[in-house]
Length: 162
Image (tube, rainbow, N blue to C red):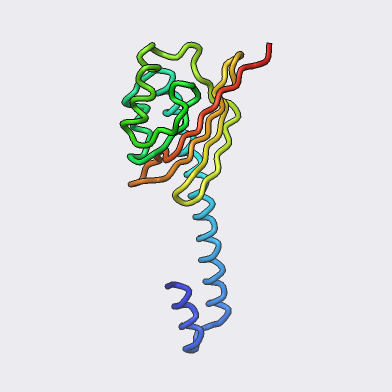
């Protein structure tokens, strides 16, 4: 809109140099805004992932399930829950037996976190391992109503060779 006003002004006798300057300033502001949004999104995703890992470590089923979108899907890393789980009820049923055992010991870590974001989507990949098992996690996130939600979780564990 402002660009059109600047061009209009130049066409009706205003300075073309002023119009170009306005366009350049507006372009820089838009680019800076995009970069700022990306940094903010990256930080928001990190905070979300930290909250997710805390829910796992505390074995808080409600907090864990609250991280997911209503139609989310998940692959969990155990034989008992190896099939894809879709929807909050199925995800809750998959984690309840594990969480019923109490807080995770040793706690899941947040190592080697890599976050990729776009406007309303993000992928967070990290290693939640201890010294015995590599616990690789990938979260596909979508911003919904202003907050991040997991739309897909893929979890795999690999034991260290003896």
